[in-house]
Image (tube, rainbow, N blue to C red):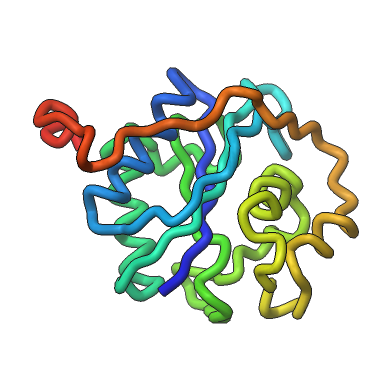
Length: 178
């Protein structure tokens, strides 16, 4: 199944937190197809917190969306995410934006992400890697949602590319940590 995942961090070593999260996804058998650039973004909601680093990845997996959510929550916990951090500062945040063109609304999971079309910190990196992807509930392409967005928060694309260790370059110490 083709997924688009949003990753963000605004505590600690933000770039390292993101890299570790992507590495953990790969170690769990998730194929990372594409990664966006890194973006530094203004917090949405509670402005009295550090700015975020965000990116979006396209991933491929045999996991169904509920299993993907379980994996993501496990990775977040292992990387120091606390359950009381919703809307506040956090070391890592991973959200499922899209799962192919599935629509899921359950107590645990909503796909597409319910605020995807309202947040430039997600729309801009998603447009970078898949402008033609469709938000199935709205029936609109990501590039069109980005054009219509009324979000005025600051989203700055960083010049330095996002890098992480692929499985072939990972050492035993890193694997033991994750």
